[in-house]
Length: 335
Image (tube, rainbow, N blue to C red; front, side, top):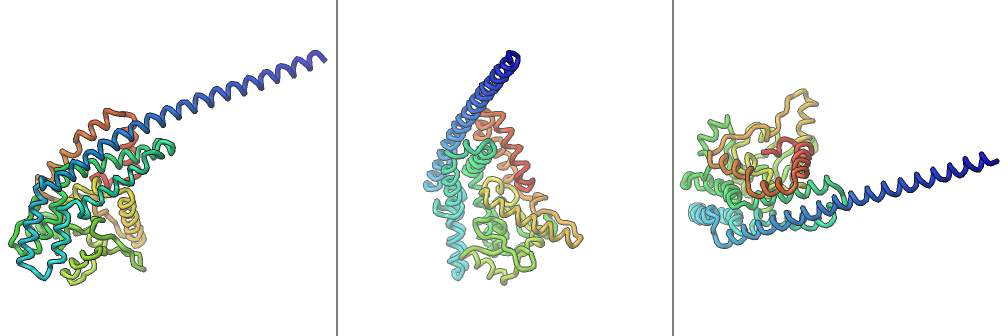
């Protein structure tokens, strides 16, 4: 009887001890989570402020016409309008990128608004969500860099140059002839610099599973100039010409949802090719040859002060963010 009572008492003691240890472990884990969430929240708030400030500075520079290519866009637009008055609507659309209400800057502002709305909840969702949001802030900040924005404007600028029928030279890009020769039979048609850029159109899929480019709104006039020839994803991928967006600016000027759509189109094309026994190569697997200026700016962007600040703020988080981007955003976005 005494032995039985002793065993029962010992069992109760062990049960209570286990419960106490479990409670202590829970407290420690919760404290760790709270600490991580607090750290992630502070990091997000820091880069939210940095990115917002950078975009505001870019807006000020655009409005003050301190971005050189904003002035060039206006000059080119006026020149082409005098040469091709029947294309006035399209010319005005292209010139809109020199303003803060144009599609390029408006997209950055929209992306920042979405990112800002996710700051409060991301730490509670965990490190992956936090890293993804930090990555988006880094991309927007890179896109808001005045040098990068100036280079992005070369794409609409060069569309206007091509519309001038040789009256205006391309800016920071190869001539049509040199582009076709160096980039191995690259296609040259009105607006080719904007194909693939989600600010101007999107890839749509027909009933056969083939993807083709569809221009937004007034940009459909570019299709008219090309006799409405269908631009298929596979053909475009093999023969696309150089553009700053597709060869250098895609990682910064593409939102996460836009990039996801691009990945889906790429994966669909790859699957279709493989089912036919053909080899598929992503349109972004090879960087098309462009001017040295574009390469220099891209190299400068990779070592920008924002990214340096980001790395010094949290080495472990930065490493995790880079690993996450490598795994979830295929090599096609690394350009």
